[in-house]
Amino acid sequence: MDDVPETLDHFVLATPDLDATVDDFARRTGVRPAPGGAHPGWGTRNFLVGLGGVRYLEIIGPDPDQPAPGGPRLFGIDGLPEARTVTWAVRTADLDATVARARALGHDPGEIRPMSRRTQEGTELSWRLTAIGAAHPSGVVPFLIDWGDSPHPTSGDLPEVRLLGMEAHVPDPAELRPLLGAIGVGLDPRPGPERITFAVDTPNGEVVFD
Image (cartoon, rainbow, N blue to C red; front, side, top):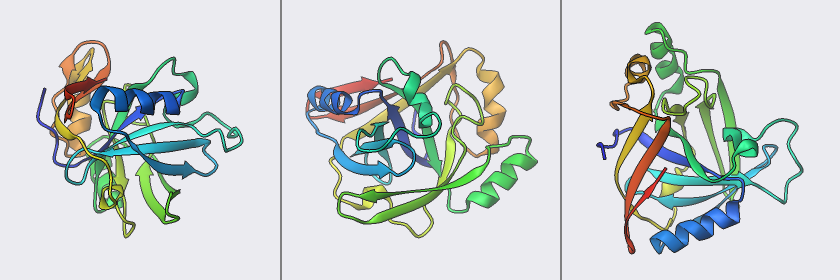
């Protein structure tokens, strides 16, 4: 596994069956993810696991308590046959400046949009992020996220596993290196079928997710 970029905020493990994926994570690792909250209007909810420091895993899937959204759910959830790591996010303290700098270098991270959710305790979290998948359909080029003054999800009492490393694979790594460099991400993809893989140290030993 490769070293993890310092600006990693979170991985996104998307699933068509959230409860089953949470149970599978708990079985494999010995750690049960904590309920995060619902994304109003998007038809999704999530569970979270800390990865050490200011980074975490988001497990996201359909929310049965919400009506079906007017369009496709985020992260291509509606078309997934099974759970998989679809993308990741890197943290920035000034999203507008980071996007402007990337565009000046020839890479457009996509439109900036606001989002929010309410935690189980009733706290509203809000953040801004760039369009999911705008950079590259593989998800290997991360989207950007800025939490502003909102509490970061890891500031709560999350269950935790320790992140050991990550790898990214795409058929043509040279195509993505300039895009990653434009947003200051030190990750060198490897050649191969498109996938994002990360390894964690758990009470059950090392476990790999992709």
